[in-house]
Length: 273
Image (cartoon, helix red, strand yellow):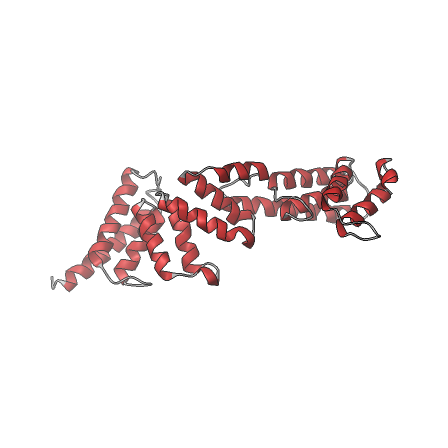
């Protein structure tokens, strides 16, 4: 079988790959060897092998690490190969491959626009500054499933402790409405306060609302709410925290100014004015 596969017999190569992958046909299971033969088939122009290599890189199975750039490369190669094929069902296969490409691009949006390859991700994980901690966690959350979620949360905590506002905001969202085992209202408020202290706009706005209405774990504190609304408005206008807010966006300024007026009116009413 190996001799036939080495001689270029595609049927033999496919059969050998399957036997090595599953340990069937009296052959000892060898995922590494199966991977080598599968890649050889893909490199030899086999569109089905290309698609399987891409899927393996996307899902991290059959001895392949999760590596989205490699998955995209092989998906595009499979599409290009199939485009020149006249076999029945080719258009459906191409559409499926394009859907997989679109899915990877959608996941990339959650990682800041780009999903790193396995080697680049490992190198990023070796760095220990706040931004690297955050980017590494974002990569894991975007494309590496529940198996590495706990690691991602731990790295977000590292970044948050180092003063990374976006990391604290992501943790707030996780502790507030993440997986059931992650829900922790006390930790959520802690991260919301920390994100606000590190000048995160959405956190500042959210914390102000909670203090104005005394909701979701916080008491009513109108002076604190007013101070937060004022801070958000002032910082938005002079862009001191690089928020780059659009002055014409209702949610950015007109809404904040409306809430500030309401909070001041409530405080005046409490004081009997």
